Amino acid sequence: MVDQKKIREAVSLLLEGIGEDVEREGLRETPDRIARMYCEIFAGMDESAEEHLTKTFTVMSNEIVLVKNITFYSICEHHLMPFYGKAHIAYLPNGKVAGLSKLARTVEVYAKRPQIQEHMTIQIVEALMEHLRPQGAIVMLEAEHMCMTMRGVEKPGSKTVTMAARGCFQSDPKWQELFFNMLGQREGYNQDSTN
Image (cartoon, rainbow, N blue to C red; front, side, top):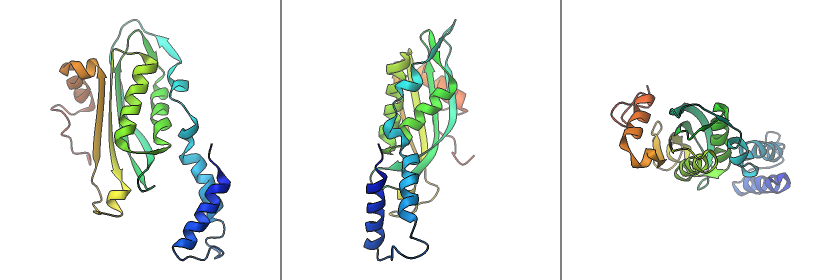
């Protein structure tokens, strides 16, 4: 549960720490605005992927399910700066499928918390395996990190790509190949992400 009072106090101290006047007109309500915003952008702290993935439907055949280009926004736990991009998720059912929107909601559960992209990728694929019990699952995230573009090495436009595979997507290369083909990336991950 987000503690708005502590956030307001912390933001006031931060503003004072950088030499600002917290009573200045433009900043007077900033601690309260930040506290309300944090309730929204860290909503995943109070959620579980289980609540989205346990409602399933029986299917007659087990064909691959892919949802691509799921937009997400998250906050890097190292610098508390945003990273954002697209998630691509596929799984091979084992008699049951989840509603398509539930896959996007699962991404949100893990994106809306202090996070690093590498962990988020693994958390999503493992949630799919645990709650849907498919024959296999694969998750790829492509993201731009403000801690790399706004500060530090300052390389705008650079993308970080992470992927995690489980089950048949890990053990049988034909399923990864199918995943990349369905993404429009015929020879593995080689598409220019600016297109």
